[in-house]
Length: 558
Image (cartoon, rainbow, N blue to C red):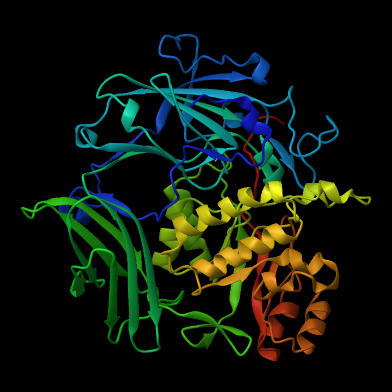
């Protein structure tokens, strides 16, 4: 297949040769690696890459990916990292408008031809011994905003969606020695119309990049449901296994004691008597392990994920966890570091988790995109409730000072955008579906409501009856046309008296403030006017302060 830049302005092309999204379980060559959490099947490609920057595609060195094309004149850049914070282009903070407004008059899905920076990344590598003679895949955990990938001069694939993994198979073109991996990252694409978040606008490969090998038998995906009936855990797992093998699944407690095992290949079902439930207060976790062996009993692959038994549901119009009413004492959290932007580290995440636990923050809305996969593991382990939000925000297409032409409104009910936004929902769900910390799926933020977002909500409900669906934007649609999208009344910055007016109606739906207080440079006075409602109205179930941590870039300028 030949690549084309036409994909950049076609909303119906958002993935070419990208493999299907899957759970973020860990894979290992054997149980010793699994116990040490050190997989030889994964080869990290983070570090120093060769790099060239162009202001737009017309200035871009388009053949840089060819094996004969030299990178001697390229600079070095750090991956993960943003181009703009390493001297290439300028960071820009934009809220409701799009970055090009006031500079160029553009209509969806078109993008600027003169201001669309392109980063040409090259990484030379040899294949680790443990990955040889196996199927090899590459995983980009986060790239803003559109990327083309080549290996040894051959086109591999294309992908959009900055905040979920993009993975491709490299097997037909990979060599044991002297591989040239080339990635072109475009700052603007049709996806830019879907990513109008209120934050710093960056670009580049800003999350981990790694290779992973699939042995002769491989767990491609696992879907785990760990329900809780008030006494016992009801466990089920559906396994997607490729290759000939024998299968052994085991569940162990926090002490490593095996409490259940099975030899079923496709599905596992257990009742765990007197299981310990998971909650933010006591985040009990169990370990689910799948061991694949050959006919001689040798281990081929070991897959592992953490699970927590819990039941989250609506009971008589109240959100309940393990049978008890829940109150979200939450915050909205952007991934951010003053030096590296959204390219954050494990240490950054641990600081955030520990700060939240010390200050009685029990919930986070991942505003307004899926976070680094490690964040979900930490929230499982430490006990943080999550609203997991799809990477979708389009308020620049409708939130303007005057009346906008309805044809501007994205995604609305426009058929050309439907599959792109559904893909974003699917990619988030598939990666995060096994995490106990995720209680609610969110269809995005401040995007024009219509049939496309309704389809996202229907998708979440069809694949996951164990969680609820959130979308605040229905409150702005006349005549409550799309109220069925969300399972809860969710508002932004409603005054306490406005919240109470809603609660007095006894609508049968719980209420949360998905954004309130606006604490950016603000003292947060008057919070008790909201928290007093917790005891007065059962349907008031808390909210998420805007926002956590200052999105400030450290600079040496005055």
